[in-house]
Image: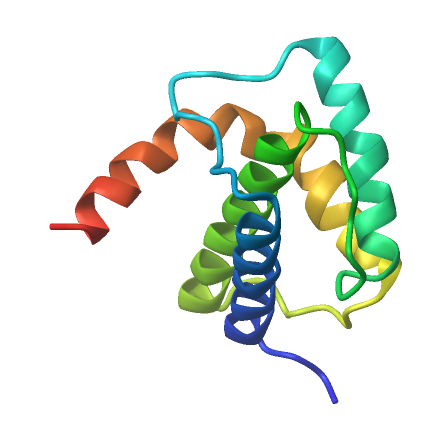
Length: 125
């Protein structure tokens, strides 16, 4: 079954919520970005997560918030893709998850992380 972008957004949000509860951490504040070295470490852990998002992930504490940031960012992007309808939703494979959590982050989502603050503020009002 081909998922919709809304279903992909929901899945990413669910993975975010499970990991956040498991790790007892939150995504970093919107006014920060990871160092280059930390970003490389997060890439490695996102690669592990992309293999099976339902598996427990024992990532180091310093990368946990940034994994959550990537999940939140891609979930928000999936919602945008659902609204615009310009990009067909892909099959969910480990390679697709890797593209979501690593490729899309480095492609544009990292630069947009500070912009999500405004979206988050709008949704809470």
